Image (tube, rainbow, N blue to C red):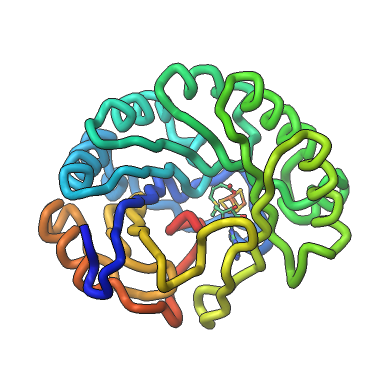
Length: 266
Ligand code: SAM
Ligand code: SF4
């Protein structure tokens, strides 16, 4: 499936919830966010139906994200539904890791192949400052659970202010090396004022080769993280929403005045 700039679009990121069990300073306000009403959140069947359609047109890679995807009730069932769809060759998840000790084995059994776990520091005090309410040890336990369950390769996502040479990032790099895990360093972005960067060690942010579409928990199909346009799969239907998103994917996004990472999932 090609967009109007001849990019092969084969990667869909699905945000399954706006909710989160952390409040990372760069992502959410301390008091949390106004929650979506249950009826405005796509059901598993709606997500499955869209992924089936997208797969029939060339999507082969799916990543489940959020908010925090592991706080969505029954998430392993959704993983199982997506894993069974013909054409889906790569199924992954981005998570803060807190609930992985509870769910890693079930997710693996359901067909999840691999996880990216967010880890910005190895200093417990700093972790509390950044996440406002989290415990570093829970994430470390989550990383162990993912490795033990075989959700491989486990990759780390580390948000930095400016560079990977900052003290927190250096700690993460050292930990990753010791544990033989790879890290993607993501410079803190601001969708609303158009501050965005390429991801170091990953594919994100390279407009000329961008192969992604994003589906939000409320059904907005977004052609670009840094663009306001969205095509709702409930109002337009799967086929039209996908065609419109493809047609309207910009060469390179500029800003997304209403964009939130917890809605779009990064
Ligand atoms: N809750 C999960 C997690 O934290 O991994 C998944 C959703 S989170 C929005 C996805 C990714 O976006 C995380 O790796 C997070 O660090 C990153 N992220 C959130 N806000 C960001 C920002 N302002 N700039 C850059 N990355 C950000
Ligand atoms: Fe939650 Fe992930 Fe946002 Fe942190 S980055 S507040 S863990 S959604």
